[in-house]
Image 1 (tube, helix red, strand yellow):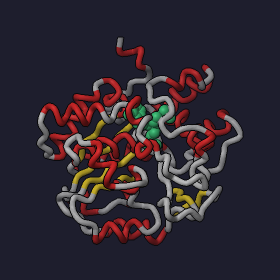
Image 2: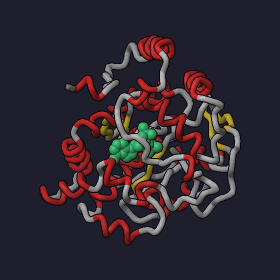
Image 3: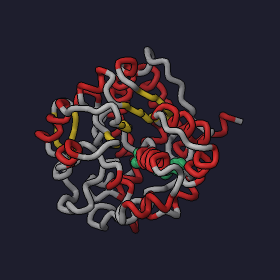
Length: 303
Ligand code: A3P
């Protein structure tokens, strides 16, 4: 989920602002700046992690930082007294496009933007894109709780209210279906690794290996094992940087919950009614009919 730069603590409870078929967060995103992302020059070493909110962005930030540091957690801790979001920032946050232009390589960024706003050079196979998808029922639940935590987003009345808003795409990120469909349909135009949150949950080591080889990182088995160790849910929970604990209270109401909340597959079962689940399934099948993607909806399905 996009948060502002920690040094830019001005925005609270602002509404979403419609912008070219998408919705930006007022005070967090500058529409003109977002428009200029499309024309950015891209280096072959650039890496963009693209996610719909609550799909494992912070997890991927942690893995990329660790791969860069060859598994050495202390090297990352030294790099920033803030959070993973300072080290691998959101390209769309106010002011971040400008710093991207002059940043040294490798430039690693995350984004929740839909395909149409992102640098067109990516579609000429410049740079690399890692798209992380998560089963959208768990996204709804995770996003619901995040709205309580995040002061720049309006707190929903209750889960049912948020469920409806999500189905309408009336949240930052817009329609989950549009987001994934547009990115997925362009995946062969780009150097893209498409990976799911559930794949990371099921076999983190295999996922880390895939990510490392996609990025051309050569790490020893021991270094890879360190990357895995420092990116498990239980270990990330203990790392303030990976929890965004340094993000000031004006932006995240830390007493309302934790960024690293449940970290599992199937939590939606504790929140959806049977009717909500059926409605969601119908919509999913209608929207995703032509997309050959299979999601894991419950970790128990693995057994
Ligand atoms: P939950 O709210 O379901 O726990 P994002 O970074 O895109 O906002 O995604 C946040 C979600 O990813 C949260 O989901 C968080 O707990 C989960 N997450 C982050 N790191 C994780 C990890 N190492 N293992 C499992 N889940 C993780």
